[in-house]
Image 1 (spheres, helix red, strand yellow):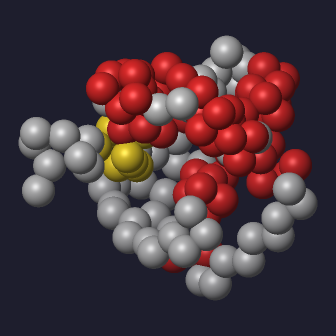
Image 2 (tube, rainbow, N blue to C red; image 1 turned 180 degrees about the vertical axis):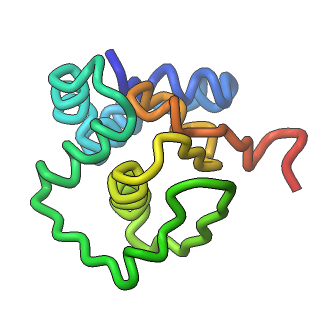
Length: 134
């Protein structure tokens, strides 16, 4: 299994996991479509993070329009800063788009996203709620 709500909650907060009723965990699983996501992940296992992001964008038939695409750096260091009001889809669009030009992508992400193994090669985990957070 790829996405496992039980394991994620248990790993992040064992006390909370013991306290939460199973119907709440089951509701979260349905809310995030755990089974459907896992089926999709199984179909695309073994692909690179960039290929995976491009497949998700294609699956949802997302059209990405880029202004001044010619200005994206092909070599050297760079930092891309973005606001992503749509959450995950925006991040996947960035990976898919920038991945056409660069294979050395790295994105700081909430460490919970590390459960998405297909994207680990482009993710750097940040613990937003642990002892080292601000």
